[in-house]
Image (tube, rainbow, N blue to C red):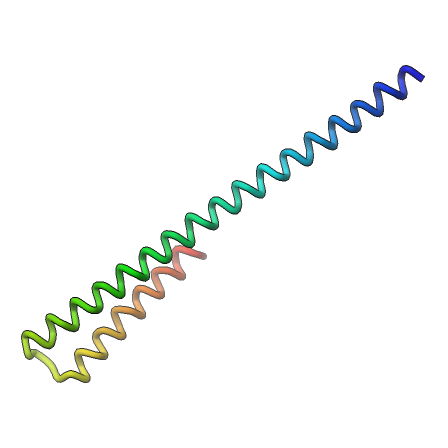
Amino acid sequence: MIDSKHARRRRVASALLATGLLALSGVALATDQADQRREGRDAKQDAKQQARHNKVDCKAANQKSNAECRQDKRDTKQEGRQEKRDIKH
């Protein structure tokens, strides 16, 4: 009877330890994912800002037509989206 109590306690302790380790690994994974999302969001926002500035500069310098300036803005934003994808994956 004494042996069975000790064995039961060991099994319970092992189960609690395993549960705790799984919970900690889940928290670490969630933290990593949150960091990746944040970095991706920052990269995308930076690209949007850069695209706005590029378009204003393009229009002010009268280098290209408005359509060409818009396309440059689209290209810059697309590069930002790709950078976000690269961060996430």
